[in-house]
Structures are given as structure tokens and as C-alpha cells.
Length: 453
Image 1 (tube, one colour):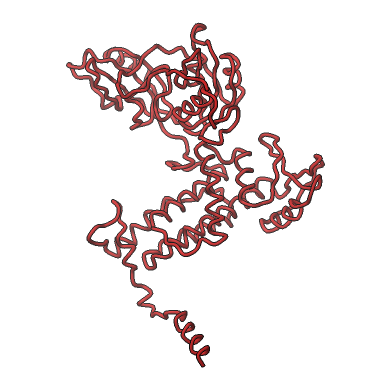
Image 2 (cartoon, helix red, strand yellow; image 1 turned 135 degrees about the vertical axis):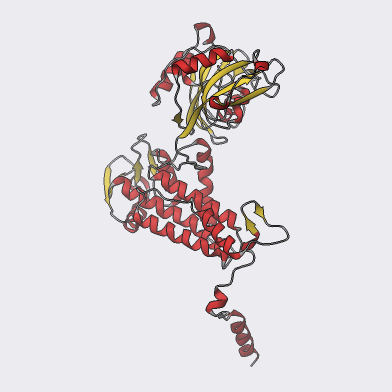
């Protein structure tokens, strides 16, 4: 009797709480505390406003037209589900977890699309073999059959981009390595983040346990997922956080006075006051609101995003005359995987230069050893090179660094590295630029001493 009573008690506790349609429509109070400016303290949003706000939050998670239909349908289902978190807060956790699983499906579908259904494989001694697959499910089954074979029968995939031969089992880790190797994923900081995608997926797939995710976290994960999917299908995301499309640069002025005051802004809203006649000006093509403009240096890369010196340094009246004559136009630039050249001469390591400026240096300025580094930001490149030049650190050269968001492409003499930069797929156009630097106590020194270990 006691066993029956216990089973009956457990069954009663596990019974689904059946609700009416009207009850199911009730807003979850927890969601109402999340507003555009953060958590609402001491109150909540109106249900109508909360529903609209959460839909607006997720509206920017858009997939590019070229993304395969199956991936699009799976992603859209998650995006629609997210909006119902207003009614049931736990939905945000479901969306967060499922997003990590959708990524693996998207990569597999992109893989099949990339090879047009014919995947070129090789065994351990280089004998080619083609897997004929047209659906994601077939791909996984066939690759799993041959990827676990021992010795020379074990199948590998040769990358088109580099010719490298990698072991490939169709799982997320090998899919990410494939996408990175084929150039479908880009950015050095993203390279360091991509292994985390595998960890998140495994955490969900192998039992994440009971946990609760806030709507802001679920929304970010879903937006990041959209960026990754768009990127592997060759469509960077405008204004993206991870894989942004080209970023616009505007014509701006940077000015500094004898007292150390620095200002910058669009040239259209940059009249020079009479009391600024003794100020120094430069005209640049740069991204708006780039804080690095406060430390602008004509010789070195000190801005956050790529900037280009157009005129100066000089007086404002001369700048106006140049602007009226030349009429420079805005443009767009890539901000990921940029190339930098860093000079190590005697015991001094100099700030990163763009390949164009480094190529235009006079013969006397070309001495020492040069590092060609790929990074998203000049500071990442400089910090990495500082560790490499000092020796004894975990930062590695050449190749992608396992400790930071940079990759050393080569180390050698000036001409050797200029040639290597040109061979890396960019156009190197030597530029001789005048020497000018915004004077600032907070700015970067142009070089620092390196003590080798």
C-alpha cells in the first residue's frame, strides 16, 4: 500500500498544470522588467510595450537571401519562438540552447552546398575518393563510416584554399576548422572565439542541466548566430558585432592647439574660429566617432579602425583650399584580418604601420627586423609582436597565435616583408607621408624598449 501511495504522490506532483486559453495568454511578469535602458527598478513595462520591445530586439537577427532554405526555416522558428518569451520567460532559455545546435546544422548544410554534393576526400596515403551526398543526413552518415577507420584507410579532407589536409568527421569542431580553413569565417578575434562555440554546443547537447537565461542573453546569442550563418554563406552583416560588412569612412578634420586641446569632426561642421588660427590640422578619411583620432599619427596605426591621411598637417585656411580643389569622397573599408608591419630595430619595437606607409619609408627608416602580422586591430598586432620579440612567451610565430588574436605571417628584412604582404592578396601602394602626431599625454609612444628573454 505504501509503494502505491508513493507512486500516486509522485504522479500527482508531475501532473501537467492544465490552463485555460485565457491563462496561457497572461504575460510573464519577469519579462516586463527588461526595458530598452536596462532592468526596470521598482516597476515593470506595460505588456503591450514589452511585447513590442522584444520583437524589436530580435528584428535585427536577419539571414541573408543566399542562406539555404532548411537553415533559414530552422532559424526563423527560433526567432518566432523568442517573441513568446513575453508569455513564458523560460522560452528564452530554450532559444539560447537550441541556437547552439542550429549552428551545427547550418555548417553541415553549407558544407554540402560548398561542394555541390561531391565531397573530395583522401585516405592516409593520398588516394582520392569522392563522397556523393546531396542531403545533410547523408553527409553525416557517410563521413562517420570512413572517418573512424584506422591507419591509411582513415579519410581526410583537403582544403581548397590552402591545400591543407584535415581530418573531418562532420562534427562541429571539424566543421569550424573547415570553415576557417576555407576562409568562410574571418577575423582574428573571432578565431579565438570559435572554439567556444563548440563548448557551448557540447554543454547543451550533453546535458546543460536546469538553468535560466535572461532575454538579453538569448537575443545576443540569436543575433550572433545570424551573423555566423550569414558569414559562412558569404554575406557579412551590416553593423555586425562579429562579422561586420564594410564600414563607411567620412571626411573629417583633426585639430590640436598649443595647449594640448584636441578635437575632431566632420569637415562640414568644423569651422575654424579666429582664436584657433595657431592650431594644427589634418584632413583624414576615417570612421565616425573613432576615439583613436584623438591620438592620430601620420606614420603609425593608432586609430581603432583604418584611417587615411588625406592632407596636412597644416593651417586651416590651407586645408580649406585643398578641400575645395580635391573634393575627397567617403569610402568603405574592411575592418577584420588587416595586415600590419611592425619594426624591431636594435632594442626598440615601433608601433604598427600600414603596408602602404611602411612601403613608402626612406632607406634609412627600413633597418632592423620586420614582423608582418594579421590582426583586427593594431593594438592586438603590437601586443602580440611585443611578446614574440621579447621571447620566452606563449605567443607563437609564425602562424596563428594560440594565445591571442593575431597571426604572424613572417619575420624578416623590410623588402622581404613588403613582398610577402603583396603576395598575401592585398595591393601595396607605397605612400610617403609627412611626419605628424597629435600631442597627447594619453597617446601611444611611437616605440618602446624590448628586453629579450
